[in-house]
Length: 117
Length: 110
Image 1 (tube, rainbow over the protein chains, first blue to last red):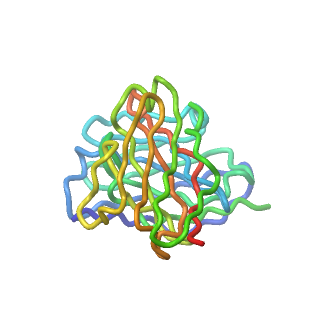
Image 2 (cartoon, chains in turn red, green):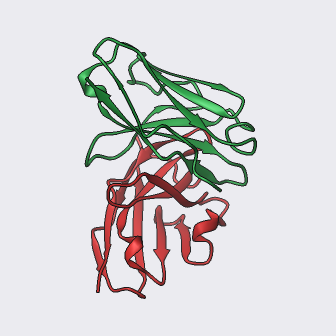
């Protein structure tokens, strides 16, 4: 059974960057999509982007193009998501989720990112 | 890439059935039979309850069912129970390895 374990909470200053990791264990990492989904406080889920490790290249929601970078390291079974030029509106819980086009069946525990001066 | 449209809230009494709609456009919900539904209790991680429009993962109650017509997908919860009180999100594949979520629907059990 695939499990996804994410890195711990972060507190960042506006304008800085944050990098969150998502380690996969117990399954085949490279063939499934690893997506990143964020949830601002009291708000809904928002798909940010995803990568299929075996293909390498990531795809992004238009809103996050140019400010978010998603990569996957096949050798360590870890996916990373970096957000640059942080602003207060980026304060959210960030989830990684694994699956295929028909649904995300495995989720990480979430990483809280707080952006505050 | 606009969010899918869901009602903000739906309520029902125990034992009743409720339906949550999820409206997209021809390039997401309308183009693919790849709508999934997630249940999220407060402070918890979202959980997949319906995939590929109408299929249930192992362990998910058969009280949950999904369907689709044109650009609108629906989730029906039958025999409503107290533990069904939660936030529900739809999600559709939108082509080019992108996805879009709905805004979420709060289900209240009266």
